[in-house]
Image 1: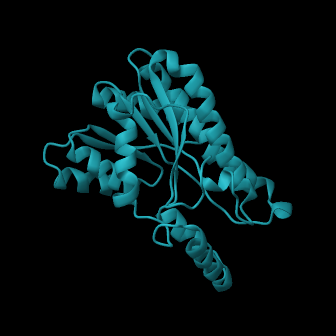
Image 2 (image 1 turned 180 degrees about the horizontal axis):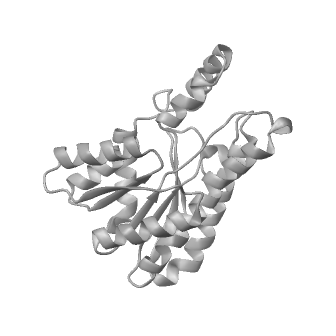
Length: 240
């Protein structure tokens, strides 16, 4: 919500896409109420279904009268030992995190090809420095970052910039992840953040720490940045 709210406040026209219709419609309504004259709409999409990705982008383009940027933040996280990951859970992880990324990037490509634009995919520091019990998550996010670099190379000739953001910020997905942990594991997660996050010893705030970076990366101010994995992580991991 914070990203859409800030962009709308700066006059950006937005279509919010999600699989949770009640939440998505509520967010769109709230932003419209707060931000006078905001052009904003909610559309349902399941990013694991290619036809839905194509349809929602087509509908968004009709509503907006064009397309400049995609911010693709859909993600799934699940904890399991590497040796016991079920095939169904592996399918779910890859379907949401990597296939969903590819489908949405492909869906916006025809509209960005003619006039350029920006794509922001969401990776993770855990792709390069994974935690125990998150091997399948790490693999899926590593794939997102590799895909981002590849399409940045391929699509740069069309003026399309593609970057991956690696956020270490507190979100409902992190809440859900922690809710499924034993008390000892929650304490271990807290210790991990205290030890590894240099700034503040905890995950960051979406609105204060992440949204300004997203706004920069979709703006012309970042016109010379593409193919990068941009950590917004308080020092959780250090890029060389």
